[in-house]
Image (cartoon, rainbow, N blue to C red; front, side, top):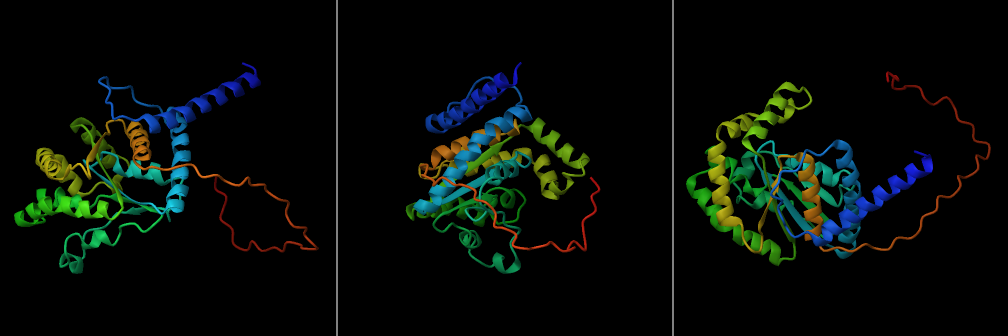
Length: 294
């Protein structure tokens, strides 16, 4: 095929992807397909991700312009791909606008505080979008299943959490909650990959092994959590995460549809010429260099 034709085909593909991303965000209606789609290739995934990244940059500029305050909660099964989804959202935007809150286990001091206190400190100011990689819902999940909290603390959380979230939303913060669900078979497969792959072994913890064994305990905890906290004002949105690439694309598309934003006009940028050297001669300043092994 002549080069000119190839360029035209690539341009058509790009326009189609851009149009698809915009249409998907504008017309998303939550329809779930009955048929399981084929696994998505990396090439197709990256092609569809690019226009969504462009849309996220538009959202970033609008959030700063309009002073939006947004909280996005990422919960779900272990190895369901929450971290990968967060990475795909943040890799092309500013970390000063899209902030990740991934809190470690509470310190001894934090254990004496009101449970929600340490999470409140991470809520957004104007122009910020905070992504919680795990959240206060630890109390309804791992803390309850593993016995890290009392039954009284657990039931108190389920009762009080909707009231807290109602107060957050009433204060003008946009709250979006995602639950990533993966099948038993694929969770097992991903855990085995983590065990065997030296690049992924750091992701595997004792709690992961417990969550694999206690699948049905975590299922019961999820069901109770949804029954108590899937409210009209702060609903849970479930992401089918069996195909991680499709899950990321679906999550980003849905996220963009849930945060009202507009594209702001931008001044046309022209790259000017560099200043003249005016006699400058570069000295031998590279005294310590990194060996070029590759």
